[in-house]
Image 1 (cartoon, rainbow, N blue to C red):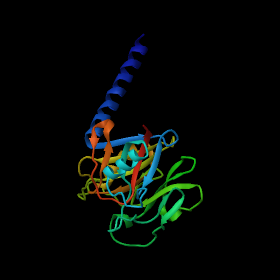
Image 2 (image 1 turned 90 degrees about the vertical axis):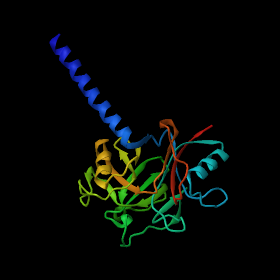
Image 3 (image 1 turned 30 degrees about the vertical axis):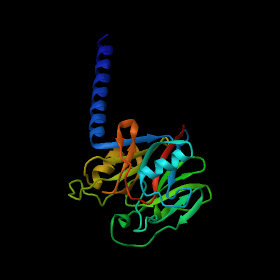
Image 4 (image 1 turned 180 degrees about the vertical axis):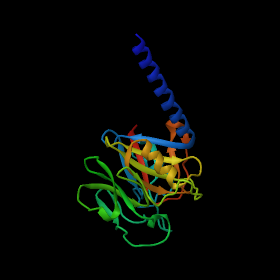
Amino acid sequence: MLIKHNYLLFLLVLLSVSCKEKIQHDEKFVIYQVNPKKQTVKLYWKNSKDEILKSINNLKKEAESKNEKLVFAMNGGMFEPDNSPKGLYIENFKTLKSIDTLQGSGNFYLQPNGIFYITQNHQPDIIETKKFRQNKSIQYATQSGPMLLTEGKINSIFQKDSKNLNIRNGVGILENGEIIFVMSKKEINFYSLALLFKEMGCKNALYLDGYVSRTYLPEKNWIQTDGNFGVMIGVTASK
């Protein structure tokens, strides 16, 4: 009887700790977990009239015009001044921008750079750009940088006490194949964002962008419909 009592007490402690962590995370981050085999996850750049969408509001209108409901949206990587994707961009199996393996300044070129992609079998992955091999099964892909996590390890260039703070968003993949999208509600450094993905069980995670970042997640009362982006990531459902 004492063993059973101690076991129950242990479970209560575990639940208490996990609830506290969840509350803290909800206060600091917008987090959305999606199963791409059960939900529709796509990358967007232009509308049906070949106009660059730019904002989440325009993406929402585009979804509604196709009798779809926008469930979640987030900017999906860095972009050029003309709102074209920075680096590789694949949409519906078509390569609309080629891969960028150059060296340069800015977050995009912090190493290792990476690519988030989804195959025709709805299998997501995040891989270092130098290891990426293009094939016909890739339905969507966006390139960004730097990698936050690689094989469960936080990028070695990040410093725990860095004062390089900004609103930041990123994407990670769980071992069960589900995708986690995260945006910070307050300014944080790279290390803190990478640590969150690690704590949630991701092996690989990719930084998407910084102060321009926006997220649309009405189920958590987080509704940002503005923005001026290149690529966006959206999850839709039939109306």
